[in-house]
Image (cartoon, rainbow, N blue to C red; front, side):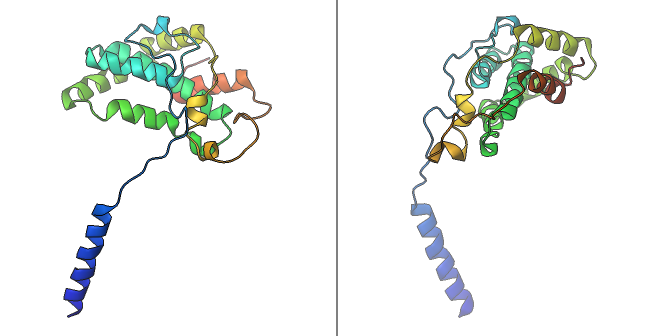
Length: 189
C-alpha cells in the first residue's frame, strides 16, 4: 500500500511539475551586444566592443568554418570579460562571460567543435609564437573602453534598488588589465 501511495504521489507531483510554466526574468541590458562584430580579424576589434559583441563575431566565424579567427576572437573576449570581472562589483554578475560563451558553443556540431578546439589549442598554446602574436594584438587594441552593462545587468544587483553604477570604486585599470592578460590568456610581460 505504501508503494502505491508513493507512486500516486510521485505521479501527481510529476504532473504538477510538467504543468508549471517557467518564467525567465532578465534585467534590461543583460548580456547585451550593442555593437556586434561579424567574423572579423583580431586587428579589426576595437576597445569599444564588449565580449557579447566579440562572441557574436566568433559565432559568425564558426558558421563560416573560420576557426582560426574564431579562436582569436575567443581570446580577446575572454580577456575583456576577465577585466570586467575585476571592475564589476556584483560577483553574481561575473558568470556573464561564461553564459555568453556557452550560448555560442552549445549548438555547434561535433565536427565543428573539434575543429574549434584544435584552433584554440594551436593559437593559444602557452609560450607559443601564435599566442605571443595574439597577446601583442590585444595589447595594441587596448584596455576596454565601454561600460560593462552586459555584465552588470546579468547579476542579482540589477534587480535591487542600489545606488551607484555597479563598478568597483577606486578601480586600478592598468593593474587589472595586466592581470586579465596574464591570468586569462597567459600573456607574458
